[in-house]
Length: 263
Image (spheres, rainbow, N blue to C red):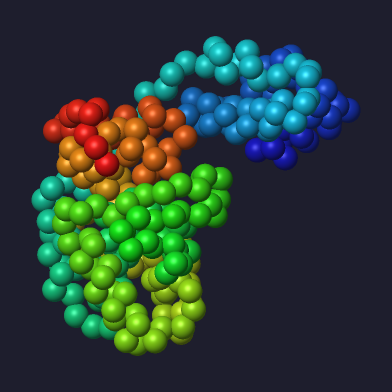
């Protein structure tokens, strides 16, 4: 998106630092963007100009007016597993046999029990899982580093402990907590998605959304429903930049109450 913006300005013989609201209005006015994409692109380019401002640039922020006028979008609620689907998934993972089974249960524990994104779980190192089941989540994309916690309710902590014992017994090489192969090789994102789809197939469930994100959304619902954590704490676990992103999960966790619970 930045390259497209820079190219648009280059055709006008301008630099990114010379753009004004006039160029911004023309740029976005010419684009056949659906509202969600329009807002996302505005926010992405806004980050560029916010960075410039933070390092001392003092000229006009060309997108400010457009961002102010941009209407709030009706964004679809996050999709997670419902109680029945989650029960079926837990059951099939609990009885899974074979050398991959302990590792797979650990992967599920990190996503459903800890809320990790796909790129976070495939890169997670053993040293980043703390003895108290806290997780130091490193940044591998645009998402910030943050800390999360494996939920105490459910089989998640037990499954992680079992895999750690199994991993040591097998003497799995490398630093990755949950590698794709016995030689310590990392999962690719597509490889992880295929594994998750395999779990769903075994469980006989068809979530409205596939992949790791549906498991991460399930974590948010479980954390909020537990009444152990506030929305602000869950925001931290999820690594959300804005509280309103976390609040969208409240609609999927109607039992969540209380801003005075302690962590």
